[in-house]
Image 1: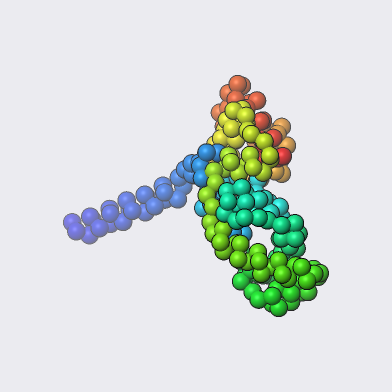
Image 2: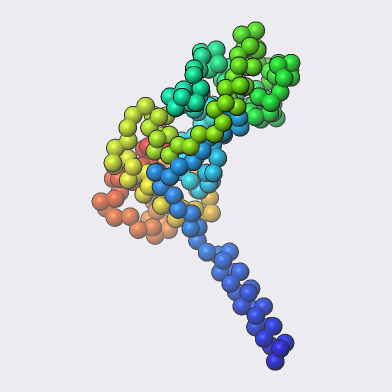
Length: 223
C-alpha cells in the first residue's frame, strides 16, 4: 500500500510540474507601473523581456535623456554639453569593446583612455576632465524610479492621450498572447496589417472598437 501511495504521489507531482511548464505566460503590467534606472549601471532595472517598454528603450540616446531627467528631478545640479558628448562617446566605446557602461565609469582616466583607443574613439582633454566629474554625478544620482508613462512622455516631449495609454496597455495584453502562441514575437519586425493577421491566425479576440485603439498603441512603440 505504501509503495502504491508513493507511486501515485510521484505521478501527481509529474502531472502538476507538466501543467506548470505548459501554463501560459501570466506576466501582468501596465503603462502606469514603475521601473527604475541605475545611473551607475546606465540601465533600466526590474523590466521583463515580455514588457513592450523594451521597444521604447534605446541606450544610444536614453542615457543622455535620463541625465536630463536627473537635472529635472534635482538629483544633479547640471548636465553640461561636454558631458552629453562624452556619454555619446561612452556608448561608442561600449559598442566597440567588451567593456560595460558601469565598468567604464569604474575605471581610471588612463584605463578609460585605453578603452577609447581600442574602440577607435578619440577623446579630448575636456573629455577626460568631464569623465571624472561625470563619475561623481552618476554615483550621486544613484537610482531613480519612474513610471513607464512618465518615461515615454519625457522621451517624446509630449503628454500621452487617453487613446495612447489605452492602446499601449491593450497592445501589451495582445503581445503576451502572441508570445504564448509563438514563443517569440517582434513587434518592430511586422507591420500593423501583419500584426492583425497574426492576431487572427492564433484566435486572439479583439473587438472592432478596440482595433483603432490597438493601432494607436502600435504607433506609439514605433515612434
